[in-house]
Figure 1 (cartoon, rainbow, N blue to C red):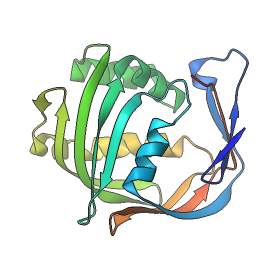
Figure 2 (cartoon, one colour; figure 1 turned 135 degrees about the vertical axis):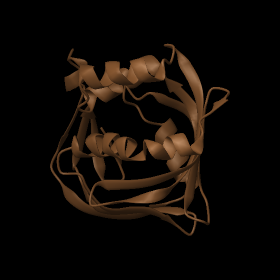
Figure 3 (cartoon, rainbow, N blue to C red; figure 1 turned 90 degrees about the horizontal axis):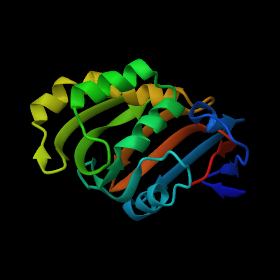
Figure 4 (spheres, helix red, strand yellow; figure 1 turned 180 degrees about the vertical axis):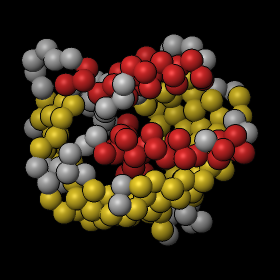
Amino acid sequence: MIKRNGVEEIKITSNVSVEDSLRYEGQHSFESSITSGEATSMVNDNPYKYFPFKMVQIRFNPDGSVEASGLVSIDTLFSFVAATGGTKYDLNKVKDYLKVPLGTIPVYLKASGSITNNAPSITWQSAKIGRLSVPVDLANKYSSQIDDFIAERINHVPNLKLEKLEVVDSKLNFKGIIPNKKFFVAK
């Protein structure tokens, strides 16, 4: 049992489905500011079996933007989405649209925005998947669908309320309510 950022993490040791491999209990108020290094460490140290990101680097910039790069396991990404409330229809739709091969691919993203009352508002500045640059106007054209996708992941966590999540002075500031406990299947 580990406690990170006010959440007690408890490993599930029995065999469970992907959909039951991650659950939460309880709630408490939480307010915090973290640096780029702390965020990078938190993401890279995530022990959840279906967490699809690795070798991640995160930078919070003075202008309020965020840059992130790393590797995404496409196989694990679909399991992660299923575990966080996504349906097979959602997964197949994304798979068909992106036409991304299974495996691990490098990704780079730069965006600005915030989350207020669990509602993301993101403006994309740059995105690369593998060696291909995604046109910013294309990313922003689908920003409402991306915001909805992120909101669905947030709202799948019971008792998670992001009153405000934003980058200020090169730090990520969080104010809201988070679960007391996270139960998960470990890697």
